[in-house]
Structure formats: C-alpha cells, structure tokens
Image 1 (cartoon, one colour):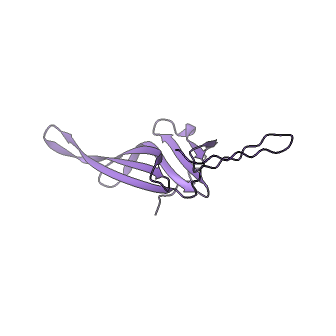
Image 2: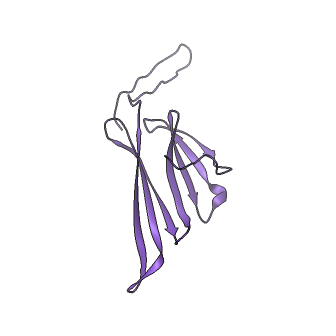
Image 3: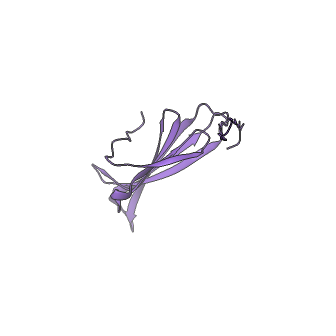
Length: 131
C-alpha cells in the first residue's frame, strides 16, 4: 500500500489531501467449485468459493474478500457474501451473512485503501454482478 502522500495545509484550519499515486485499480475474480461427498458418493450440491482481489497499477494487493455459496442443481444460496465493486473513485466492500440480513452494510474505501465510511445496504440493489 505504499506510494506518495501529499499533505496540503490551508490557513486557519488544517486540511489534508492524501494521494498515494494510484489512479487506476483492477478487480480480479477467482471462482473455485468443489463437489460435496458423503463417504464415496457425490451429492447433488457443490461448494462455490468466489475470491475478489483489488490490485493497484503496480500489481500490489489492496483488498481480498471471499464469498461462499452452496449450490444445488438449479440455484445457489449464499452463506457468506463478501464481494467488491469499484464505483467512481471508490472501492465498495459488500458484507452480509445468511443468518443476519438486517445487518448488511457497505464499507467504502478510496484507491489507496483509506477508509471513507460505512453505509447501510438497505434494498440490496447496489450490487450487480461484474461483467
């Protein structure tokens, strides 16, 4: 997470303008599937793990999040939803669990990895699958 940090001071109040030199980040997604087995038999469901990694222009990893799904023949049910989306000049980390949908939230970060704030994930409409 290294880089250049600029600090700007104004008269009367101190304001900081942090930049780390990262203007572009890349979102990389890895998906692995594993069949469930009982003794020697394969069951009709599988465990799918999706790993989202955010890399800066130098190839350094900024964030890594893992989502876990249990899929049957026709549908998937998420056990742990930790996905990443890049919106404008921010990185959004979506968090939810199967057991507690009311406490779903989004953490917002800039491209340097600095925490900007947290917002409620109310209507489940912010996240769409990346193309």
